[in-house]
Image (cartoon, rainbow, N blue to C red; front, top):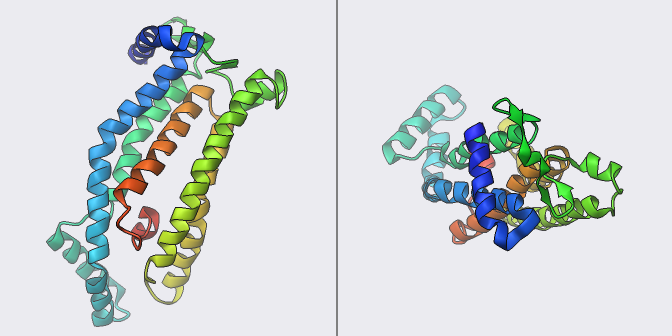
Length: 248
């Protein structure tokens, strides 16, 4: 973790002439963008997988009719179909999973008072008036909702709300355009998931409120990137189900 702390400090030093006291915050945003650039090829592969998955729907429907209520035979035939067409139903999860280590690294870095036996100097950095190691509760206790630090959080909440609203509208359209999958209890379960999916982005508001500000910056930057990236990669797939629905 000390090596990562030195990396953030070094990037912050480079950005100091442009961002002054918020250079470390800018370094975290830049670090997030670099992580997303590294993961982008996997996101493109996931989009190709979603297109392939959508193209297989007619054949999957045929398998359902062929095997009827024999779930075991249907699952086996489905796995064989995916293997034959070289389509992985889990491909959409990889970009998100590979970003988790970076998030937890930032979380631990800005939750620790010491690094390598010495004081964690990164905790002294701020985004405007809000300490990068602080949380929303700290901002509320130091100036209130509309205090200097509170206003920083209100700005982040506003960005998250805009991105979440965009994702909500887009996901509603995708789930509405996706054909029904399964029968009976399975169809009811998938319908419940489809109803819940558009609201998932709003849970980011809770994450931003409870994690250190540095980790919140990572989340806000990453979710904004994801919204733009998915809109570009899936622009010609109005009927593609979101990854979580497809996986279900």
